[in-house]
Image 1 (tube, rainbow over the protein chains, first blue to last red):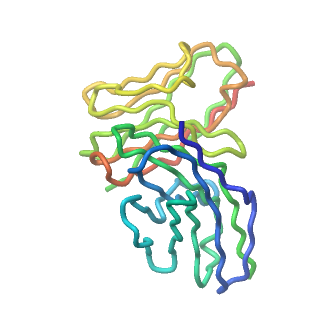
Image 2: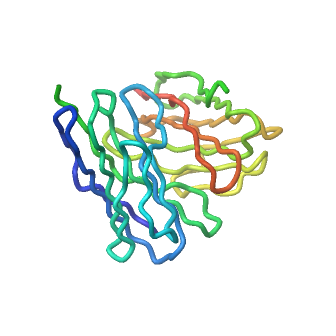
Length: 115
Length: 113
């Protein structure tokens, strides 16, 4: 079974600075997807960025980028120019590409933005 | 596009009672997923549907839980004889097809007293 580990329960960053959230995962599969989801307080979870395992190039979405290290099974999220609206729980998630459509989530990292 | 809608947003029930939650996916999304999220944890997969067919159920889904998606549109999740351990946020998500983005609803927070 796949597992996802987020070892940072809480992180904080000064507004406009850069922060990196860590995620490691365990799988025996070679083809899968990795995701970062953002869950603001009392609001629905939204997709921040996704990475396909067979793509070596790291995904980027505006201020959000990932560092995908397949051999190390590491998938960190970098948020540049942090904004107050980035404050939320961030979840790393895994999904197999072998017909199993469920997402396996980590326990999350609570990100606080310091004005 | 009104997003994934869940009803009710909050439910308080006494132990032993039955509860039912509803999820309305984004229209034309043929995949619908249910997850459960307890405090301090990430969401855990419960079950999913492709159209009206329930294709996978987690071992977390005990016999007291049942989910349906008649006609491949909205879905209901029923919990019979609720227990305090059922207290959680129940999340619904939908996606257009395989390997497309899953959109989540705001969830139904269940408290069993």
